[in-house]
Image 1 (cartoon, helix red, strand yellow):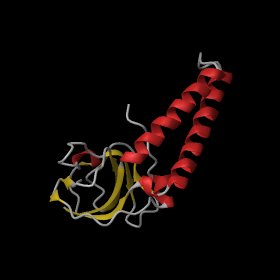
Image 2 (cartoon, helix red, strand yellow):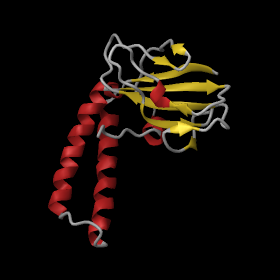
Image 3 (tube, rainbow, N blue to C red):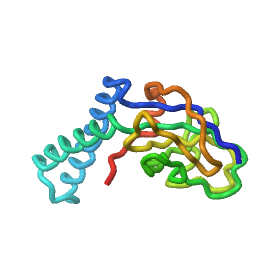
Length: 166
């Protein structure tokens, strides 16, 4: 298997994109919870939903200021592939919220936490928390060379959305 980093992104480089992502995420949360309340499938009140929405927004804002998003290209995969096998050896934190994409990076090829061995070539996008200046990334084939960090591309905000740590 061959793995190479094709993107290294810091959400904090684009405050406007963070706020746009948060606004969309909160709108979806409120709509979902509103529908559940209306259908009698939730005991939450509208006030509780609004209170939780404010908390989620703050959690997202805080996390997106300190994480990094990586996009790697994988070719020659022959086993179950997990983005959680990537980590920053400085902090011990591993890949989070993976998105498994086509080689052109424009569509999802696998849902869930892993890619089956039948998918030999793809991209994986994943976050690593508490990314600092001295961060390094190690994967299943060893340490990877990082590219200069850039802002998160719009397609990755859409295809590899961030979710707060539980």
